[in-house]
Length: 552
Image (cartoon, rainbow, N blue to C red; front, side):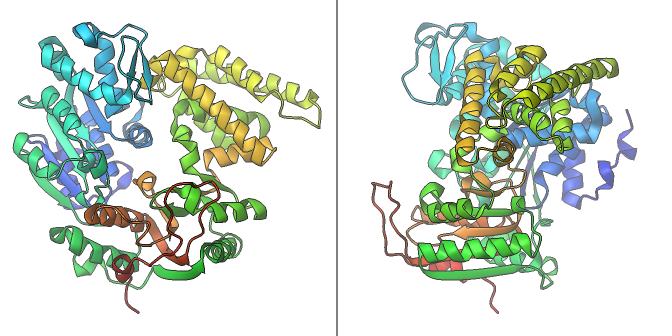
């Protein structure tokens, strides 16, 4: 442990004044707003490092972080691990709202009685089939956790005695039920809460995200309101474009001129007669970026407001025809961010592609992040021996079908490490049915990719997005960043929802770009063959959104 006075941000990072103040605040709760690229996640990781290394979160107290997405939760956990090491980071719990609520339900399930009674082996379903004793939906998790905390002071006290600090990430998307859960668990306690987010990126209004949530939180928790102004992501020209959008969305957050100086960056508007012409031009352009500019495919993203499988089908057909690696995130259904899926892909990569040392490192880090040295050595040895045995089996397979036994190898791998090891990767896996679902979906997805390319190594690369262009909705792009971003279909007929929400969505898309932003629109967009709902073939460029482009 070190004293508060000598603590400095890890990795030699220099935090802006408000970020440093937020990281070291010990007396009050915080309502921290910040724009894209301001380092919100990094500030939370540094705050965790400060609390743990200075014993401001005294043992055996823990820190709780609640995020909205699995990948965001995992990213924050990994950052804290890198900042403060194995022992201290083991006292950092990072969950989604769903997984946090599920832990409450699983521990205090006996509180639920009558129509809300749940059996021990209850299942969680994506679909709304009605709540029963043995099946609920994900939408039921938070309300049931609220009911438990309302009825049981033992449950409330157990949570309050566990944590000294709580982090709430992407707080602008918090719904009324999620906020009720937060208040029930932590209001009027000595627990310090830090809520971070950006009201300009509020794109979950359709799902019930609360208006004015930061002001409400500041009142309810007597929180200090702070703002982070610096943007460490985008080049100056892109920052100036973002700033014009900020003038409309949140005037007090407009960036000062001294942050916007410079000519670096690129923002262009391409208009086409039809969607086929759009796809052909973009494919040629992307080919040039990859081959001539040496931009890694993973640094290129194509963002679409809605329905990428329909708006991007011409583009994906051409990518497949020319051998350009890509992945449609809509089809992935977030399976790629599941730790169990990652484990499977990395093990297969170790078997079939011996030039993938990163896969071995990720595999080991997933399996033994917190074990003692002698235990780590034993696990490494066992896995290494299993890989060698499986490689021998692969060498014996027919050259006509060298990948026929890949799932058999995965089955043996799971048997060796034990299901308990996999369950430990995520709180959601405590439901065996959920774990089985993840394993089935992973297998199905790899099989689908093998139909596109029969080479298993190529299929695994598509799955893991190591070297692929990503095609995804703006919603799924939150928290990500890319060298080059293409916003496909900046048209009135694409951004057709409530004006404020669509403007926030557009801002999220624009702010993903680090160096270059391309926006496209078409006069005619062909109806996809499989699409049966309303489709406007005639299109109009979105005049407001395109007006934010920097003037020449």
